[in-house]
Image (cartoon, rainbow, N blue to C red; front, side, top):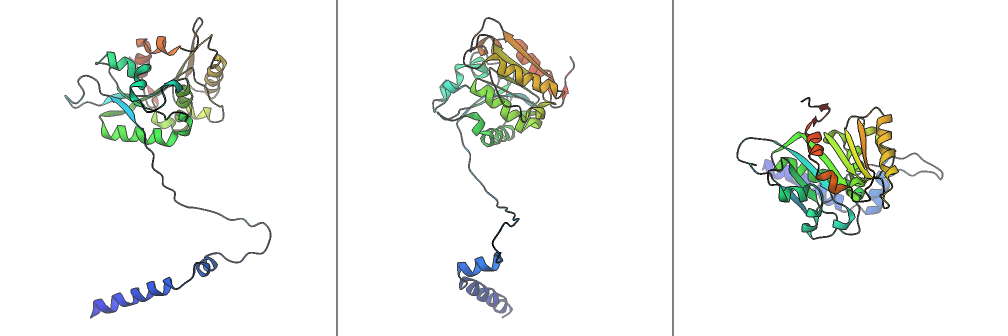
Length: 256
């Protein structure tokens, strides 16, 4: 009998609520306001689904013992956009890792849909990074970010939105705006550009690096005097870049 008495009032309440018209509920929650300006506030939880295809490279020896590996997130250029993941191996760390199985990094390389920009995919990229860090044996203190052209542009944007996530970044022939560049004052930056680049002027990298330095950050720029837009091949073929990555953990440099 007690159960019956507890349930009935609830049923009555639901029935009563169902009889209230939408307009009546609106009138109950929104007081009548006179004409003119009124200060109001708005809050609503919004959820969305993000998805992409990506390549992940696991180095030789991965999983054979308890070990956390440094990770490089690579953002490709506009020419590699689309739905063919093999195109992502055309340049950069995925290309290096394809040939060098003992490349000492986990490499995650998402693919941007054709006609879209990395700068519009910030939520996707950071959530992908979370997914990879949870799924694989990633050293979260040694997560690095790099990209070329459109991906260099995306590297600047993702890093200043989430500077706490990266130990160091290497934007290549990239560009950005100066509004949030001081967010990178604690993130080491090594930028690269070809002096003869006709697609993205070298001044775009120079202004970004100078702005980080003006904020008290650790930033440097390598300019190849005889190189055009493709300055990434020589950059990614140079072991010095990867050694530089490994010199850094989040918020501190590793002394050799």
